Image 1 (cartoon, rainbow, N blue to C red):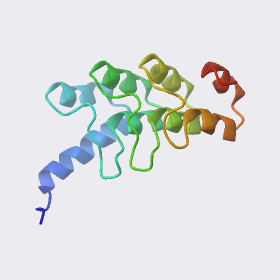
Image 2 (image 1 turned 90 degrees about the vertical axis):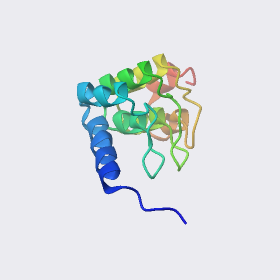
Image 3 (image 1 turned 60 degrees about the vertical axis):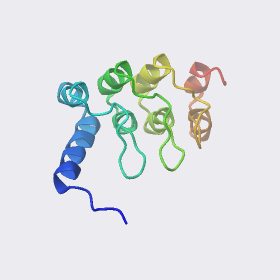
Image 4 (image 1 turned 30 degrees about the vertical axis):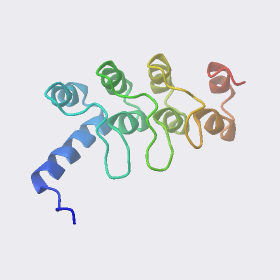
Length: 130
């Protein structure tokens, strides 16, 4: 039987995930630089990169990648940060993720599949798929 998580740890993790969503890069990086894993995940498998990418926070995504976060780590539903950025129309985030090594063919649906679904031909060209 597993123990219930420490409420203070849960509160801190929630704060850190919110920093990623809001793009509060300086505060977020202070936690990462102090030892919080750059690939910290929530209970749905969303990483800090996924949350920052989905919410259009290109600077936070860049800073996390610079600190070793994975550009392609899929969540529990098989979604990748770049596919989320395509879905949300966050081109600056897409470019940061590509520069960081993200694979637009990774995940389910992939960024390529997502771009096709929404008729984003300019992104398909960017991905070399159009």
